Image (tube, rainbow, N blue to C red; front, top):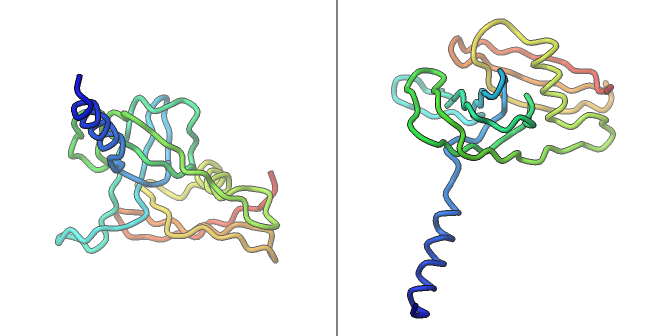
Amino acid sequence: MTKKFVFSIGILLILVGCTSPDITGYIMDKKNNEILVVATESEDTGETKEFYDAVWARDAPGDVKIGEQVDVWYDGPIAESYPGQTSAGRVDVIPSSILEGATLSDAEALNKALTQQRPENGTLTVRSISYEADQDEWSIKLKNTIHDDEYMVRVNDKQ
């Protein structure tokens, strides 16, 4: 093989490995090997000013948790329902942070909010997550992506 050919193959492999994720968002629900990932940034689709991409991704790693922020690459076609449905080809967890004075990370606080105090039915997205040191609690603002209702959930910062 020529050096030029080997170099070209190397560049191609780098470019293929650098593709952007299909969705970045929080894991808002989990059932068996499926995760519901909902984007936090809305899109203006013309039909609605705030459309939040959401997808149920099957074949997700078993160790991912509700509340974690993830990048997901799809493996195969996506069903055009809402939320969409597809297979996860790759799931990368975005490291969560523990703020000064807090015991829980932001992912753990969101997990508590969604598993212990989940608002009524609907696909939810995260509007904001903040830690209030003087109250020793997390304030998590959630939005129902269908009905536009917003919920403020407070989570005590104890494990």
